Length: 381
Image 1: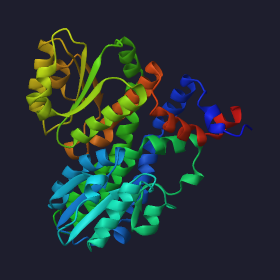
Image 2: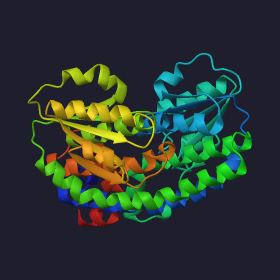
Image 3: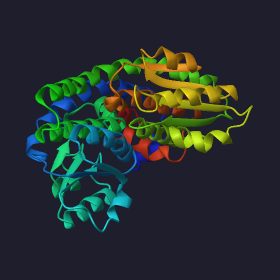
């Protein structure tokens, strides 16, 4: 075995990596169902009665996007104000209101700025809860943590890839369940409403599994797109975090011109930068509710100047489907939990973009990570 196996693994064909990533993504729904069970069993011990009067959510990268998407459920389900911040910004806070509850989110539990955000909160005398996949991490050693999966070491290679790719989804499920728990304990949700919401969360893994079916369609779409295309990903409310996730995954794995924009900001600023004749691929993440009517207006404007409009929306929203050039319908769910399902086309888009354009320097670290945990591919090396 060569000394630097990671460097050797960098030369494994792209098609093999795409195959591995798609196999991992196909397991995400089943693993999400296990994660929901595992997280629920921890809520009383980790989150407890949660007497907080304000919620802060801090994370980096995918974890920050999950925080953005979870801010709205926290406000709706708990009746408390909630703020989502990048860990670096949060770590600079010098004053936190008393009776705050801070969630620090890091899949591996080792991100230094997220750990620092938790320490800042602890020094301010407020409660801190970590959200992480890794039980044996610095985060789990320092703070009470919701761990999103029972035992990574016992899973197979493909499942471990699914956990790496699903950081956003697993973190989001933990935050949703924590918000539901706090809202129920505080009396903001009665038993009936809490039961309905829990049932909706439990139904999400099956919807995630069905959303994988658009993989072939997304690959065909990317093969039809020119190398000169500019990509825009738009979302509002909880979907803004999803749009930023799309942007990050697409740029990371394809190194293409790409913009992630809040829908209203695009309407007032970015829209006027689109030019007739420009090859603009404008993606709308449109769940039922927040931003839907505005999205319909902006779709019409984009099409008038020749932009190509793509929508990720409810499978029952015929009006959105009529306004778009191409749609990727996902199983209908409420706006508050829609990111769990609407994120899947973005994950597929990133994987197939890597297959089409080959990724850039930023993909190297993820490639090392994926390959390092794959015994099958390591043996082939």
